[in-house]
Image (cartoon, rainbow, N blue to C red; front, top):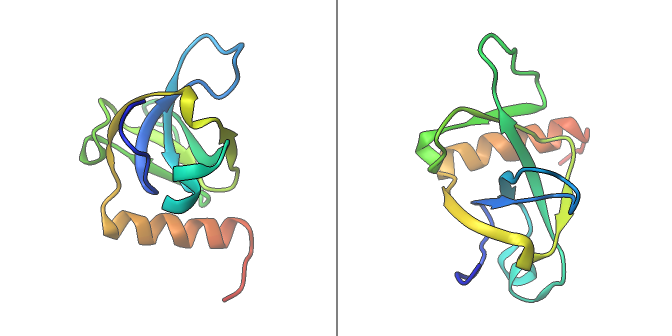
Length: 113
């Protein structure tokens, strides 16, 4: 991808080279890591099916972040990808949703402040 990556970008990537499809991912790594690291941390998204419950460690992102459909992201598992594997940019997460995602990550990992 030619644009510089930033924390809270919603991007398109194939997590595993053998995967058939690309999926949305949410960049979690800090901006300075995105600028220079060989791998960055992301949360991986998948389409939310009708009637599928949202678990406490998950969040749904949608057209507000540039996605075509409601997409479920697990805040309890980080994936690492090479920035060069990112092929598209959907949008960015709003400050309100950033706080919600941050709270879910803290809860999923049972981190204390």
